[in-house]
Image 1 (cartoon, protein in one colour):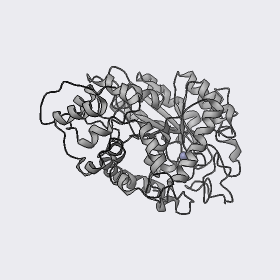
Image 2 (cartoon, helix red, strand yellow; image 1 turned 120 degrees about the vertical axis):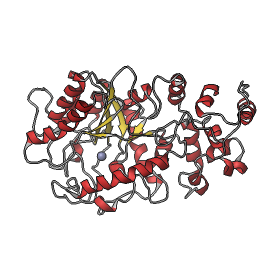
Image 3 (cartoon, protein in one colour; image 1 turned 45 degrees about the vertical axis):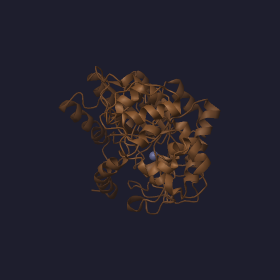
Length: 439
Ligand SMILES: [Zn+2]
């Protein structure tokens, strides 16, 4: 087993722990790894990282016309199956020099201290900065764009696999890099991105902040994925075997349970694998056939989120419309791990925070965090912005206590000038609070 595969396994064990921790606080940025299954339908999201790429697929797929560019081929195949996806694009890696080429079939195949897409020395053939026509083609094809960072520089160190890699040091550097791509896409293509996925999923920034803080500054949600399409792995030396390696896991999962992919997010590679091959150029069609045979609609992550915003909320729940509405408006109603926990008693910190939007957090971070050093009160309790907004900072340490119906009534009346009818119970459940919020 290769080092990066060990790292993935170790990562999986840590992941559950991290997920549990991420479920403690509501936050404007939620990490989307999967969604609750969509009732009465089968819907799955498909995401593609590291493109767009203007070099030809290796090998070409003679069944299709667009073999001048891997991304153009993927767009053509998706269109043939009526599928839409989320393309998690980069700006350009052309500034990531001086650097040395790494060895093929290793995690440093793209470069020693940086990644280079689509290939070392050929950076101008990938990324939005140099390939605007491919970005236009993606938008025209109905695909969603997500921010995979401008230069694909790690947000922080990762000693296990990427020890020799350069990485950012501050929240300001990370946010600046994300903003560079955000503004390029908005000004050139009139498109506003709402998702981001960190390069190699490294979250911790050395100055004490994380990808979540950077995404809150940009108004994004965190696009993860629960199902790996496998197109990034090194080739076995047998191209047909490489394709089978990508298709067999999906075939197996669907055979065991045709509903298993409902609400899932699939990860694909819009670029070369570690051996400068592109098995995705053939495996994508096989994936789409398998999903189509089981009655799946393949959509962007944004469309799936509109249907099923949370991981733990049945889309048949009677309060789902209100949840969808508040989520689309940017209200901070869910936990960082994309759960909602409807039956949990509402806490004081949650009562205040659920009336704030992504924009409130963005304004707060721009004013009080960005470029200002470590904000220990905010990092200790992410409900700080809400307490500050309502002039209640003296009560921040009581944020974890459950509220009574009287407290909710008083808060909504005094702060939002709304009168509500609510029993006089000891606790208010989170789902009951949703239905009385006046937004
Ligand atoms: Zn990447």
